Amino acid sequence: MKIRPKGSGHRVLIISVSAGTGHIRAGEALAKAAAAHPATGEVLHVDALRYTNKMFRRFYGQFYIDLVKSAPTLLGWFYESQDEPWKTEKMRLMLDRMNTGSLVRQIKKFKPDITICTHFLPAEILSHLIKHDKVDTQLSITITDYYAHAMWLSRLIHHYFVATEECRVQLENIGFPPESITVSGIPIDPVFCENKERAVLRAKQGLRADAPMLLVSAGALGVSSAERIVEVLSDLTMPVQIVVICGKNEKLRQSVLEQLSQRPESAAHLDFKVLGYTTEMDEWMKSADLYIGKPGGLTTAEAMSCGLPMVIYQPIPGQEERNSDFLLENGAAVKCNQLATMAYKVDLLLKDPERMAKMRRRALGLSHPDAAKQIVQKLIDELYTEAVTIPQESPGKKAKQKLRLLGRKLLLSGEEPASVFKSPF
Image (cartoon, rainbow, N blue to C red; front, side, top):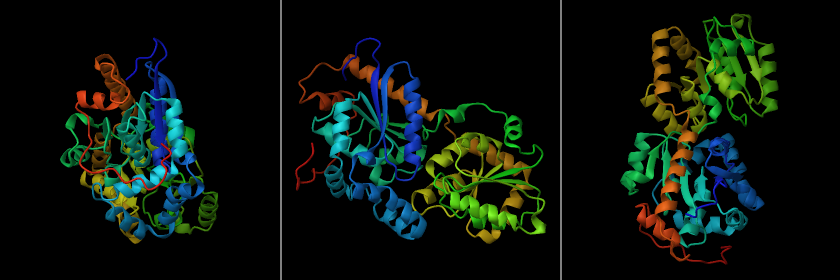
């Protein structure tokens, strides 16, 4: 890796994909951590889909949201059917190369020393470019769920950052060298590392200090069953405070407000607060006693960093179901398969302080609030080692020579897809 003039700093490129919001949020966290590191120079975070055509963007972005809303079972079937190492690699790479010419040009223009991908799409492209000596960069992938789906697998990679030991073992058994895998946790905004007192936060939020608070979240995009959850929580017997965050879905927020205006007298012991999109999710999570919603990778990592147990309802088939399994296995969550029993289950938890305390401890034990900082530091350390130990080679051999000397050449078996079109690179 090239050595830059003293004081210039390393160029860091972070590539996310706006399929949902989690990959982007992970990228933002890494960008903040990279910008704060004294060894970095220019830091660039891009959404890969901004460099593709309209049809491709819709397929990767909006189509995913459409399936979550209207056909989650189909989404789950697709997820399971594709979870076989290298099964669809050739087809995906061919489609990606046909639609990402602008992204490739942006990568070459920026000339990154370090590249971190929070989605498999750009990682596939970078792996191909490095293999064919088109780009000279240190490539790493940060997996943003608690399980490594087969689509995350890349032929050539410097480093994987994963959320769990199980995920590390999974990659090792597929054939990736142990030294190329780090259990870092999922990168979340550094604000979650800040120590904020619950009493101070509740006073700021207009919440009582003497009553439990439930945080019901529809996610950043407001895609959930929040209205039905609010309806069944009206059957809670304990006096609690319930904060409902509707994200960017203003229609949902208005609907919940209308619903609460007509709630029965029997729910008078419950205090509701309804919000739209917020940039203070860390403060609401740190004020809460239970989180009710879907276990997306980033949401789960944020909740765990706050020691916040989860009540899971309707996880998206596929990755969220596997995130749910992880939380249930580790005692940091309960799952409601039917809305009819949600109030009953929540009441049981709130009436059992010892169990609640244990779940909170389990959640904290699963947390990695400084994952973004650790990932950046690990990559800076490895980059420095490469820079001072790798001899100068001809451009055609440079990238492969570095990987070979470092024991991280992961070109596993398999042929390259035949080129049936004019490649942009």
